[in-house]
Image 1 (cartoon, rainbow, N blue to C red):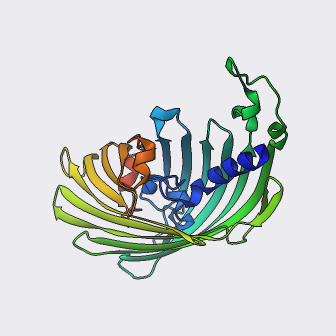
Image 2: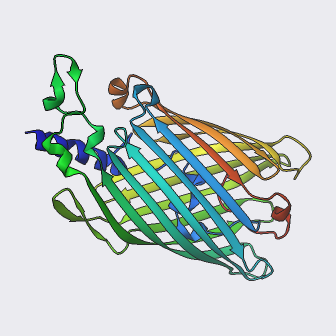
Image 3: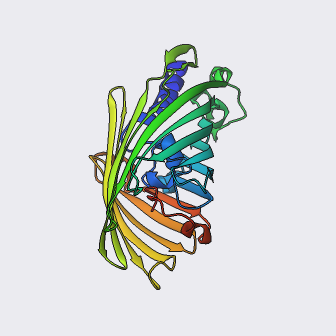
Length: 335
């Protein structure tokens, strides 16, 4: 019976990646570009870019779900007038139930975006990514019925479940394409499609082996200038993996705080995770540094069990401001 309970706990942790309200996909997904489409690698106006994001879910209840990701990208062929080549490295860590179950990843990606017209208003890109994945089960951070006595839980007592500690690793291959269109008026439209784990790697969980299904990401959005100092950014992402799905859509307004093009902006907006949460967002750009905060306000039935203990995310990015002016490119959807 104890082994069955332990197995169910770990299966519940495994389902974090594909269930509503316990999703490894960040609310500020655009702040983690290499995790949503390899074709976004190096697709920005500067020479390099750093991005990081952390998520704390239900922190008031012992911080059971914690996620962290960081990436660095380098843009190559900056002097080329026909396209851009980029390379990047992404590392991430996801932990649940006081690190009883954790997933760590490291991915290297490369992408090339080429101009399809003489004016440079249409770009088409493709990217590829190799990813190393590690899953770890650590039952020593859990408590079991046999450890409970008159004085409470005695975690020094060894239980049969502790023999289930295991580390599993496998490699997955990811790919994506990206289409960007801009107009002379400054309007922008983008559409991307990415497939993760295209090789459908075989892995195992405890004593069971399984093939991880392909995860599809569909991104779309655009930018609409409202006046010389204000832009409206629209974005959405649809994630599909076997029978699970998740949809996020929202709008962010960017407001220049100084002279036009001065690199100082206030970002205010909100997203909706359908059937799950409303996500207000506020951020600040200052000479190449961008910091932002978002908070998930749960609207689904899970809010009863969560006692209104919602999730918070903080993102921090850096892109040298001076290098942004070197080349006029269609910007990556990162705001």
